[in-house]
Length: 270
Ligand code: ADP
Ligand code: MG
Image 1 (cartoon, rainbow, N blue to C red):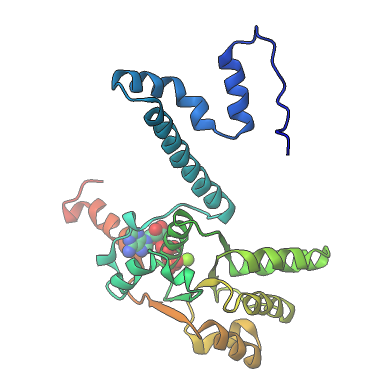
Image 2 (image 1 turned 180 degrees about the horizontal axis):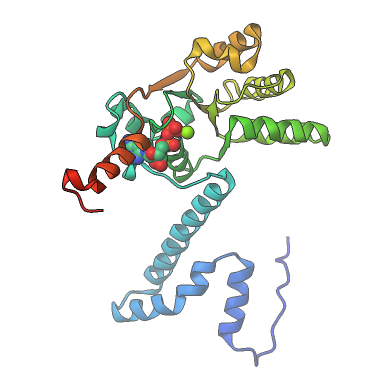
């Protein structure tokens, strides 16, 4: 097969301009940005041409990896970025730290297992879910994050606009679906069915992480139907890691501490 013709440029065009063009067409932005700087470094170190090219290739790959992590984080639609670096495990002794750190390595996502985080408000469920979601993005997994209420709303809207299949397809295709705050708002019968369908479509195909303030025996109050809840729990808990966060509310504890510090009789400065 003949090689594709590359337009022979007018000789007057400076090579830097041509190079910038080719590198853009080849999608090598780190090459384009760094080739001069790396060339100077290579000259200083007396590195040969293969070493010079190797350094540029390494920079391009590092840059590409960083860009794809950023893209996955954007596509996940996290409401905030949280990581385990800012999570105080000592403040939540009921949470199994060893298990959480193991989950942050994301093997459970490769195995298509699920995680359910249970506990009252303010105990760090969303923080944990966001940090596991971030870890998944960093390890190369596609993630989608939504509260249960928003997800059901989105599905209902998609159904009304006759694009339910597309929405379902997207939700079935991500490696990790995070559904936050299941339990605060009960669903309508249609909403419950739509969420059930999504979870069924993901069964053994991808991982789902759910956070809830309700213990399992109260999930019927959210889904409205005992039959549906039973079938759903059956699928979700077939391969599951359960995280229990039963300590005090972190919000409450920190605001109490803050108040104590700012009360003059406690000797604290405002
Ligand atoms: P939940 O989802 O269980 O209601 P959140 O995860 O939203 O609780 O936590 C409430 C706030 O407290 C968030 O800002 C979160 O980052 C913070 N927080 C909760 N637990 C911890 C913890 N153990 N260490 C650090 N910050 C925490
Ligand atoms: Mg929460």
